[in-house]
Image 1 (cartoon, rainbow, N blue to C red):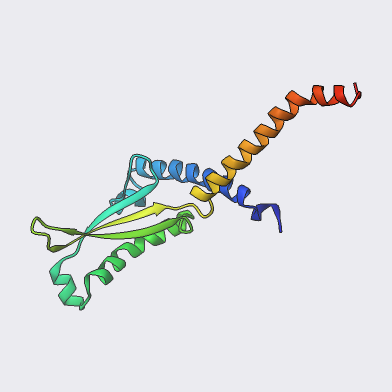
Image 2 (cartoon, rainbow, N blue to C red; image 1 turned 180 degrees about the vertical axis):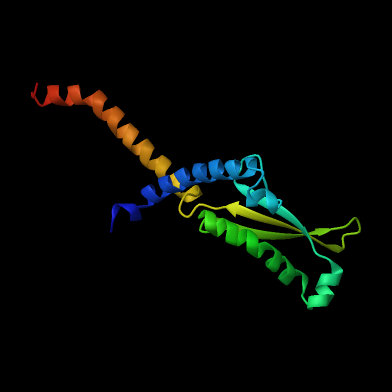
Amino acid sequence: MSLTDWGFVQGVKDVVNFFRFRREMKREMDDPASMFNRYGLKLNWLRNIVYVQFNCKEEDLQKYDYNQERMVYFKIKPICDYMTDLGWSEYLVPEFNNFTDEDGKMTLSYGVLLVFTPVRFGSRWIRRTALWIAVITAAVTLGIRFVPEICARLNIM
């Protein structure tokens, strides 16, 4: 088992990749000629979610004999290819949301979210790392405090 397979190392790599993702998406968003802006993509305030809204046309659904979900998949494919070219497909998880009108009926509008989801970094990893940091801090603090007393009792110093 190599060092890169350790959970702590993978968690740190996820945190580093999160900040790299934020920086790269901000750079893509600020470039008016980028594919990011051509596809009409947007970022949330934390810059961990890329989102876009699609409006399917009834004519296209009938013309190509598609259902709505398949039409959304066809529309999102170039965006997924773009994210793959940027190297972020491993970290992005798509979520599809169908919008409703005032009466609660489904419309032909979809919101598509590409959520940055770390591979290893999560709540379990945070709890485990915090526990290890607390144990090591307590051991070091108590060890430094009691070392002179222990040495005096053992007549080492």
